[in-house]
Amino acid sequence: MSEQPQAILGRAHCYGNNVDTDAIIPGKFMNSTRIEDMLPHTMEGIDPEFIKKVQPGDLMIAGSNFGCGSSREAAPALLRACGIRAIVAESFARIFFRNAINLGLLVVECPGIAAAVSAGDQVKYDPVSGAVENITRPWRGQGTVLPDFLRDILASGGAIAGYRARAGNQAR
Amino acid sequence: MKKQTMAQKLLARAAGRDEVRVGEIVEVAVDRILIHEGIGWGIADVIKEMGVTKLGVPDKIVALFDHYAPPATEATANFHALCRRFIADFEIKEFLDMRKGICHQVMVEDYVNPGEIIVGCDSHTTTYGALGSFATGFGSTDTALAMVEGKAWFKVPETIRIEFTGELPPLVGAKDVVLELLGLLKADGAGYASCEFAGPGVRSLTMADRFCISNLCAEMGAKVALMPLDERTAEFLQAAGRPMQSGLVTAGDPGADCKREVKLDLSRLTPRVARPHSPDNVCSVAEAGAVEVDQVFIGSCSNGRIEDMRAAAAILKGRQPNPKVRIIVIPASHSVMKAMAAEGILQTFLEAGAVVGPPSCGPCFGGSFGLLAAGEVCVSTSTRNFLGRMGSKQAKVYMVSPETAAASALTGRLTDPRDLT
Image 1: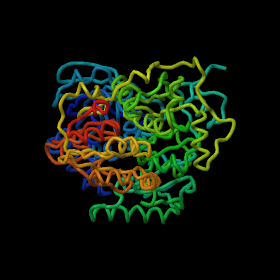
Image 2: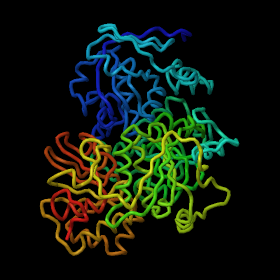
Image 3: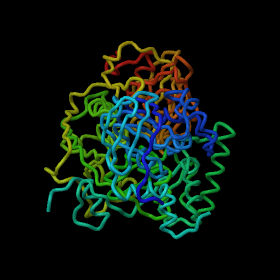
Image 4: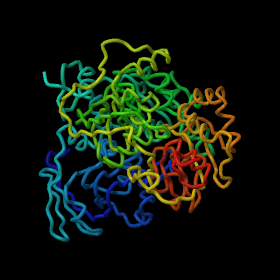
């Protein structure tokens, strides 16, 4: 486990304010326990083309209150399963934020990000300083730095890994 | 000692401290954990991945099914079977299956006590704040951690103090109150915050009104939605067989630091509607213009109580609804349905041609029955109207009170209940 996490650089997928978890994964597709079954429907409520476009390592950029609505953890789980490396938004809804951290999915609050990035731009995030940069159309912003205990959860790969470390479990 | 809000006091009490600071992280024991089909939506997988074979606090868990109650497809039937195996494997005794109703209604009827720290795998867990419980929604992992470790961490929230004066006029309901607040604060206006209700107007609100308001504060991003404890709280709990104890946190300190203060005169409210496709897209029913209606849904954890059913039935009784409108009525619990039968309300809905469904979430979350086709419009007392929530992405959902829903069923258009002759 690295003490100095590396910078993240990825291609942006951009969405607006109040992207809700029904949009990320509609309730009608949640009749399976398997992520693989739901994966083709990721973001279907807002952008049915997303799942065809997304590549591992991409970033999601959004406006305010990302992930609002239902507490369904499948929402961040599916975004992570698609290969989204980080979500940078003006702000996050609270349950989504906790869920994402618990899953080891990097979530960054960065004022001004929504207007500064267009789809396809290359965006860079430095986890140490919190700096967010649009490489494609030069812009720099400051992401909120998480409190230590949340950074620790992320660094260990999520809450389950953190629990296993606490409980002294061996790796499966 | 500095003045504290109700949220601060509840967390301080749970943490065994005199006071807590807004913004600090506290870890507290959880008094109750509510789980439903969320078991299959991640909780079971997380617990397995944690390597846990025995839960830390199985006796604090209440488990039931309400989202697929009963299963309408083989897939959801298998889903339930998987959840039942988990419940048996992990020895969760308080398992209600489909015998009681929607989680949040069952919890306030049978389980919640003031002062308790409660987490649920469902965003509308904020409902129990009406009984002075610090109650909030979690995702699968946080819920699983609480089930295993019996505790949870919270950032002590800022408070938005909402002061009510006056009393609701006839045909204006608690749903109109919370829709008005949603229109004012918007979907993130209470983000991470505690909504704390105060003022003489609270006293005029019934417990049913308070549950409705606390429930939908989740749509403003609220962490908790706390009502003060008063005589109505005491009466409710007495009738429920859980008499209110002494020494409880009953309210926030007047003058405690708040992020924002909102004042609402209940007597000046008029029927509201949240237009497609967001619960905060609120205006008066009059301002919404002409809206033709295909389906009316009365129910959900927002408005499925006996008081809601009485209000809707009073409007429908002895009148014939517009035949093009399908009316779906779903009581929030078996208790509510029994009361409907006893009071003749069930009869009223059946005579109106309504489909009366099993106590469950039903059409609200779009995974079960009562869904909408492309181009259809539903006027609904449910909790959300996001695009595609109740079926087709080409359908529209308007969120209203039970009174407005019933009035709209009569006319076939979105209708202010005060306009009926």
